[in-house]
Each structure stands twice: as structure tokens, then as C-alpha cells.
Image (cartoon, rainbow, N blue to C red; front, side, top):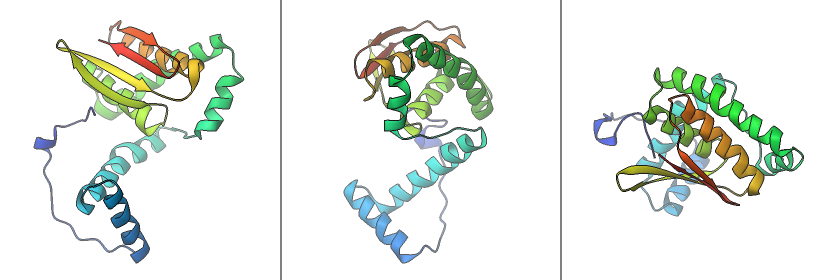
Length: 178
């Protein structure tokens, strides 16, 4: 996952909070399901809240259910979907990236793409290294029209930094080779 700061550079502090019993039980159960410590889970939840949820709500980000997004795609023309992806990737990608990090770089575009995919619920983001070059795989369940939207979003986002990656679409995936 791309982040603003490597884990080894993040300082931690000790803090004590009171939470209701049902919240504590829910957190403990979720930590067990994820096979992680309660501390790690709470830190991850707070990190997502502060670095993604709060920020995206301020800039007008709207979350919709996957079935709703799927219906929107199904009812739209391919041309309209491609245009929406390009517009979102260029305008929103650029403004959100600049507002969040103050710079348009490969790293900050990757961070924004990760946030779009994972927080927005559009896709599962994974990044691998192939012969020293990053390859981004975005897995989703929106079919060919979903791939069309996501690929155009990614293409436009990378064009804001004058990058022209090779983008390959599948029925349930988009692969971006940088």
C-alpha cells in the first residue's frame, strides 16, 4: 500500500481512551477475525479515519453501494463511462492529490489511486515490482464497463504527471504497467 510516510518513520505515542463496552467487544472480535492485535486494528482504523475518511468527506467524496454503482454503469453508454473516468481521474485526481500532499509525483498519484480504489470501494489495489518497475493491479467486480471507468481514471491521473503507462483491461481487472 502506498503511504505518505514509511512505517519506520512514524512515531508512536501512548494514549488512553474510554470506549463503550459494545465497541470494545466488537473491536476485539474483529481483531481476532483478522488475526491481529487490538492495538494494530485500532491504529489502522484511526489512521484510515484521519488520513482518508475525514479528508475525503471535506472534499465532497460520495460513497455509494456497489450495486448502485453497477446499475449506473449498466445504464450508461461506454462513451459516457470513459468520459466520467477521464474527468474523475484528471480533475479529482489532481485536486485531491495536490490538496492532500501538495505535490504531483508518481508516489502521490499512486497514493491517490490507492485511496480511490480501496476507500472508494471501486477495486482492490495491489502493487508488485516487475523487473524494477511498479505494476498496479486493480481487481473489481463491475465487469467490462467497470474496467472502462477505472482504466480511464488511471490513465487520466497518470497523465497529470506526464506518464503514459500501459493499461490492460480485463472483465474484472485493470493492470497498469509503469
